[in-house]
Amino acid sequence: MKLAEKINILLLGGGGREHAIARSLAASPRCGKLYIAPGNAGTASCGTNVEMEATNFGAIKQFALNHGVGLVVVGPEEPLTKGIVDFFESDPELKFVPVAGPGEAGAKLEGSKDFAKGFMMRHSIPTAAYRTFTKDEVEAGEAFLETLRPPYVLKADGLAAGKGVIIAPTLDEAKAELAEMLGGKFGAAGSRVVIEEYLNGIECSVFVATDGTNYRILPVAKDYKRIGEGDTGPNTGGMGAVSPVPFANDEFMRRVEEHIVKPTVSGLAAEGIVYRGFIFIGLMNVNGRPRVIEYNVRMGDPETEVVFPRITSDAVGLFEGIVCGTLDKYTLTVTPLCATTVVCVSGGYPGDYRKGFPVTGTTTSALRAATPPLQEGNCPRAETIVFHAGTKCVRKEVVTSGGRVLAVTSLGETMDEALARSYATISSISFEGMAFRRDIGQDLK
Ligand code: AMP
Ligand code: GLY
Image 1: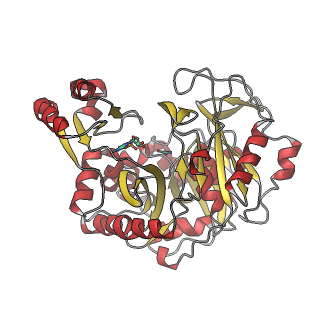
Image 2: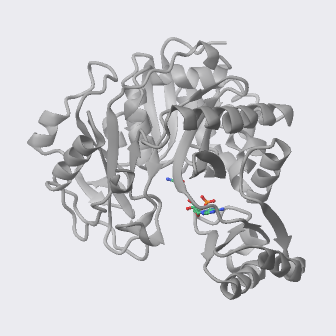
Image 3: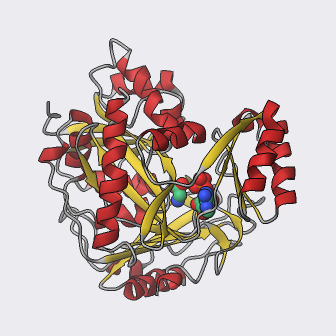
């Protein structure tokens, strides 16, 4: 199977990740009309924003049918864990519209930590030792904690808006946390709690595109999750990212492919799970040996803002390979340039913050000069791209509408060169309360 030579595409989501995917899709000669739902002020420059929630399947159906959509690309996990792929496949009118992403069964890799851990055990994929406990098993959970060494890792089984992982420094705190989690702190997401061994090392993010049989490993990235410099303070959605990652060298990536990617793809197939989409593998490098921290069933954010700009092969062709089962025919090419992104966030984020502040400096003449438009196709050069995340356009003015507002991505011959470009661009951008980390990439030197 192949997609038509030119197709209309509906991209679901509205963050920096979706702006980066939209930019690459729009650069493809095979992209007809590109719709982004709901999109943001930045995606509007790549296609047409549609006021529609990514989880409103009924509205998505009508839109896809009315606008001749020939491919749906799903950015965030929520439509996937809620079964958008199964919804399309079981609808007589929609079943010919392919959706890039796993069905509900595959999305459990992200939607249930217990399922993901069981899957890794069944396929001998290296990960932290663990056990899962329910609310009737508090004492057994405490006994298991006593067998581990500090710090203690406790994870709510279900999706808890990225807040369901607790690292407790002492046994007493771990026991108190276990009781709170099983007592309903995270609602239904915490009705089961995974307790696991703490892995000591440095993390990176590996992205795999798969059609269920074949796969392509996309450029590796590292993200910066904490709000504060030196990786301090509370977790955020991500404050920056770099690609490539120096420690993820050929030998490390060979191990990742042999011990993790191959058994993951073949394990899904062996369990009868049809998986056509991205697998995001969060890895810990433990003395050169990769171990899986978590799976997500989508691309990462802000990692996508450094991964996609490095991909030089056709983005529509990549999605075609995923949904048509022809990834073996797709030649993935990647620029050797380094990419960095620095996220500008609203003051107060990840706690309470205000929205609606005007954003200036994202289209200054200096930036326009540094970032030529894309008519030449997706041909990376040393440039800066301001990806929008939490922004919207109100009466022709760009205003803040979320915690993470912009992801300022640059390419350069070296990571330092790219970083210098991102920070130079940020110096001309402003909105009230803007904050960003000045140490992205510094731990890798
Ligand atoms: P997760 O939501 O599973 O990615 O966990 C959030 C963060 O907690 C990860 O990015 C790691 O920094 C940390 N983490 C999770 N599991 C472990 C582990 N077993 N050992 C060390 N750190 C962990
Ligand atoms: N950057 C981590 C994530 O997308 O979950």
